[in-house]
Length: 606
Ligand code: ADP
Ligand code: MG
Image (cartoon, rainbow, N blue to C red; front, side):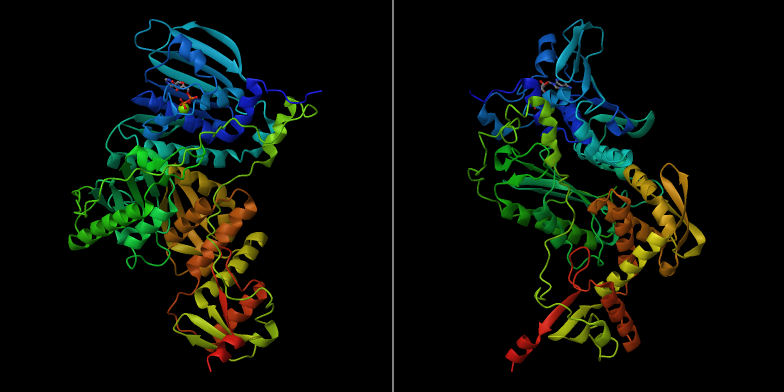
């Protein structure tokens, strides 16, 4: 008996949905992108229960004909490309024709849509790929699509969803990525009947201010220099923060041809331009927009990925670095430039020969609807849900490649508690503590060692909820953007447990009346911002993870700095407590604490 059979479309779509629609935020992204592709000037997003119950997007775009309204939900149905070569000249956000098919496979969708030239619109209702209703209706020009009970038929996927606060944060993050590149389109975002963001049409600068600016902290509004560079290969424009306005928590955004992208290599270019200008641990905020021929980039990678390949990354790196450096240089000569008054800076760069035919890898066999592995008759299609169970949350952990600590794994017990209590200790270069060790000389980074010690201590206090508090003489106001307010709400019990006295003042601020006693000499706002930044960057969803991030951020904020001269008693205290923590090699973020200069290496020198 033959055992291979084709899956019904509805099942194939559900499987594909597992890749395209991983959470409410990915659904929102697809819907809003469709509105923008349809030329909308105004887009309203209405969300209930972080998208679990309802995700609705209303636009005033071109709408769809009766026929198109039905076709839009078929897989591979798109109006945006016709043939493979169109992939090389994409100017729309969507092109795969898989989003609506995927969404309607895993939710209950109701859509009304009308084109300007039609008198009546179309209403269509689809539950889990089944069309349950299609009829003419009266509705405004544009499209109104309502996605209810996402994953109602995929219990496994529903279980993957995080808390409402986390999912709402994901929705907002996705929303920011889009609204920052469409300043001319007006957006609103409503969650559980509360207007969270109201963004009028305006310039890029106004949009950035509307999203992140906050009247109580002139953090984003006054601190930027404009960059603008035009070359034959690429145009780069945007805003970068003045070095002295860098913060521990930065907003860093790259966009290419109207699309958000992550690009660690270009991030390095920006950071290199700032090198020597930033205090340790401080990060520059920036909003950088690239315009490049669509032929010179490859966006045809996974639908939910935000990495984009450039044909000639090295050259773009150089141009970007020069551009940022030049802008910062001009700024230091004319320190009065600020966000409001900055003129654009054109940098004469060597002109490049026309872009060579780019090597863009398109996989013609790429099929987002491919099944994961074979499906056999005994695993009937109703079992397809189990296909989700292997999907991992692929969020970046923020942990960089581990540098070599220079201690072979075979060397256990480099530092032994009994020995470090009495051995001689030296401080070197205001930065390292030298400790005679089992097989050589251990070099211990004093700042990181202290972070490890404090981290262990804060973790213990958090677990026992017994942080000591120091009352502030003058309460300070912590003002935060919406998504961070949600985040800090999640962290509140732990922040209080460790010794912060925080009261919510308004929808976007807290008053800080007390801080952990160990931080008594610190100003509380940078510390809290650092915590929020850490949690957001590293990602944390469980209480355990929040605590780890809080403890780590506090430890980073209060550890002894480089350059501090230590007495022998202080050094011994740090080293003994470090050894007691049991992990003296690396910090939780992968950075090396202890490096070993082995006896062998030392002897070789003589
Ligand atoms: P893609 O965007 O990749 O083409 P989708 O599944 O997201 O695929 O959408 C399928 C098609 O439905 C689009 O190509 C477009 O023609 C139409 N469409 C979807 N949303 C809208 C909208 N809001 N307004 C007008 N047309 C839309
Ligand atoms: Mg689309």
